[in-house]
Length: 344
Image (cartoon, rainbow, N blue to C red; front, side):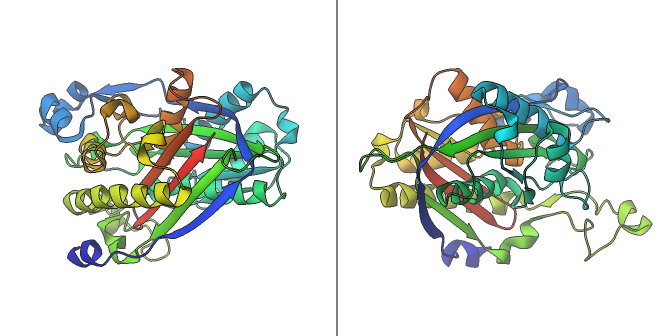
């Protein structure tokens, strides 16, 4: 871990302008799980709140999977944008909790929505939405897509050990979606889209957050299940230290490369992993609390769903709107990260 902190991998930067936000929506399951509901783990509700900033989270019922969350969020975005779904020509879904390994969950969502468009999953853990956003943006800017649907969705309650006091209280289920369409020519300095973006990964930290028995390396066995290897395992302290440093440094980098300054950003929408991570990055950046979107107190860590879910709430609360400039920053297992300065 010390090597990751002292000699981090480099980010790769880019720019993708010429598209606008055409619609936004989100969805969370109706089942609310409060800190008091987790008393069986032997942890005090106030301890969870102090450690993470989380008061409650949503858990999907047994019959609901990631594709259901994603489709519901996408329907909300389509309704918000008032667009004909027949015009959607690309679907990119960020998730690390697919319905199943084969087929891609994006294909299942495509069928649920009745779309006639290529569909693909992007797996980058909690940076999944950032990776999906940058991927779809490239298609729109290149002229290969006229209306892209980008979804971030995860059903974490299926991959986190319900008996693990260190991880179970932190995660929830949820999804968010955005529609991207070309915005046409603009005067210099008035372009819409990703004024600057950054993507990066550091496989040296792969073991810090992983589900050991979930693929070709360790197929499912009765012995593995008995050892609960099918569930997520996380070195929370190490990831915490890495995330605070990464978020602060990467945000400074993308803002500088966008040609703007921190005071010109209307809202910072960080991955909702832990209130102390967001607060640590905010303090390091020297910015006031009202410039940050925070909703993990009600939803917990929804992984790929967290950024678009927080964006949708900020949009509906009119904290942001057409023409607003925001910073999105996702980070998590991989280790992987993605940030962008996004003029909506």
